[in-house]
Length: 414
Image 1 (cartoon, rainbow, N blue to C red):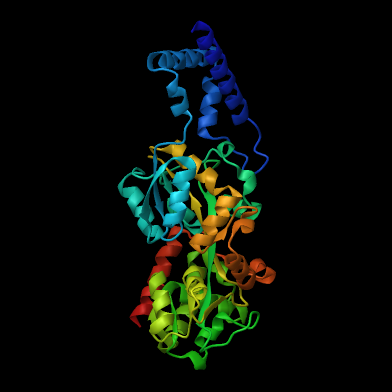
Image 2: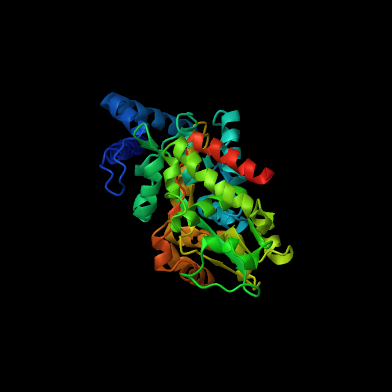
């Protein structure tokens, strides 16, 4: 028994030393050159005495409860509470997560980034272990102390395309640490009825929504239609570059005043405003819409089902957004959350998630495990030129969101 305990002590000490060394390796797989709070604390507190004390305490626990506890300590059991977008973790993906990790997963669905933030504020960052905020909402989270930074040494970051890591780094680093990890990305572009409208990539424009031949037959989100008009007018030199509006309030008002006036003059073109996936689908399916500014996944789901619709990027470039993983400060199942992210960063699983979620993966090699339909759609909707022209929504300053709501309300009330 004594020999067994001595061997276990040696094993524990070896494992802790390896973990300590690993935590202090340079992060060569990511642009983020930061040290996690956990690693920093370990560096300050690490001594031979504390290491031996931890080993003895662990041995004492094993002696008291039996060797079976070692297996439990390293298993991926327990539960994890996710607050995620509808359809991004469908039942089949949730079941596969559970089957592969042993973790029981509880899903709550997000309906807006504002709802997600308000919920976490009301609970002071408690109640969920993993959430999926959108890339462009970083400024709303910054400074609120609702999130924990990620320990990148615990994750296979080498599996993530650098272009997506850089997007998270661009907006979600504060206090020298990263709070957002890439998961799925998608676009908002043009959805249309193929039996009522003909389009060709390279010719289709955001401005085509306002042509006389589709008057009274278009749909979109109010704020997105305004943004689409802004980018269209900028492309024909009608206004200064639309992204300049993110620089300061005066510039934004100069741009959005022109955009909103244009939208009000063309309000008769609008058949309906959509607010979710089902309203986009019903608009094209039965409510008289011929063309609209839509999200990709609901229209491509209709196309997959054989309905006469298509989704296409305009020549100005599709709007792009990315949902990522964040960990609330009140997390109670952190180990399980890390295990789920690890699995989502496995190429095979990432390909399956992208296929069933109707989204695009940020993981290298995921396309090799996507369905043939999903791969063909990806190639059709996003040819190389379309990928190069993606227009990523910038992170909105708090003042920007307030002014945008003001102009949106003016448009709706007209």
